[in-house]
Image (cartoon, rainbow, N blue to C red; front, side, top):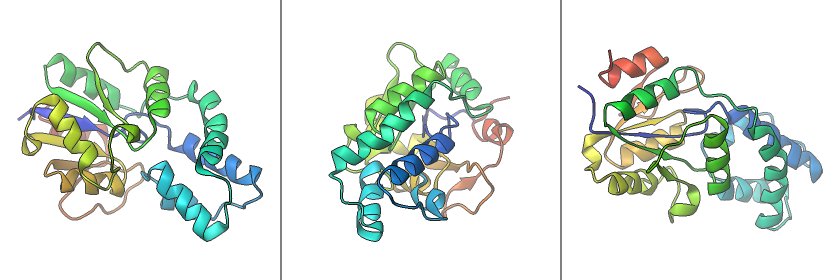
Length: 211
C-alpha cells in the first residue's frame, strides 16, 4: 500500500553527492594543514556541518571560526555541484509518487545553500515543493525535528509517513519521529534497530507499494 507521505534525505539518498562532500572536506582540511583521518567518511556521513566542525576542532586542532571554515568547504563544493547526478532510481520513484499525489519533502542536514544547489543540479523541483535544510530547524538529525517539521508542513501524522535515508544518523531521526523508516545505505551495512534495510531502488519501490 502506498504511504500517505514520503520524506527523503538528500545527500546520498536522492543525489549522489557524498563523494563531493568528502572531496570538499578533504580539500578544506588540506588548506589549513590538517591531514584527513582514514575514517573521515564514516565519521561524517549524514552529520551536519556544526558537529563536524566541533569534532575537527576538538580532535585535530582546527582553529578557524566556523564561518571561515565552512566558506572554505563550500568554495570547494559548489563549483563541483554542477556535476552531480541522481542516485540511480531514486528520482524516478520521487516523480512517480508525486504523480500519484503522495505528499513528499526533502529533509536534509545540509545548509540551505547546498540543498538548493544539489536539487537544482539534478533538476528536482516543482511548484510548492517542500524542503527542510539544517537552517530551518533548531536540531538536526539524529534529532527527530527535521522529519517532524516535514510532517507538519505536509499536514500528515508522522505515523502515516515513511522516511528514506542512507545514513544511520538520518535513519535514527526517522525512527525517533515515529515514522516507518527505510535505511538505504550506499554500501551494505546494518541499520539501526527498527529500520527496514533496503539495498536497491527495486526494493524501495516494493516497500512503497509501487508496481
